[in-house]
Length: 188
Image 1 (cartoon, rainbow, N blue to C red):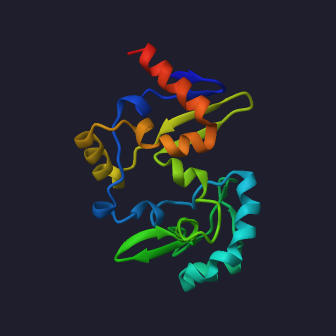
Image 2: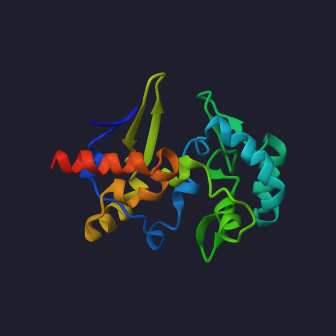
């Protein structure tokens, strides 16, 4: 584990390579799984606020799920997540463009409709955060549907932490990321 401020990072985030390859996976991570995307408590209010602004970008079944369950839900494990459609698989915020899954929230962000990109757990994927009272642990979530991202990352020689530089800075700040790079250099 690598310690940076009040976080611990698994070495896989440095040693494993990863670059999303949407042309291969088609964004399947947004439509597979056993729950919606994990949300931070502060993101619940953001989703409530932006929903009317992004509703026109959502698929009818996504709108139906949100109108029935809310902009966020508590899943069977007691975790706050995005709501799902299609038997707890597809995120309610999904749209499809040319056969590729796209986040309606991110699309609204890119179009200047909202100033929030998407839930941080989505932006950080394949990192998953486990929170403890005194610190957070960042782990690499291995999922078979991301095999193309792993091979593409190896081909490009991009470690997970470098691929996720922007969301890591979004979550923890640029000083945190600089300290991470210093720790990695010192341990190389």
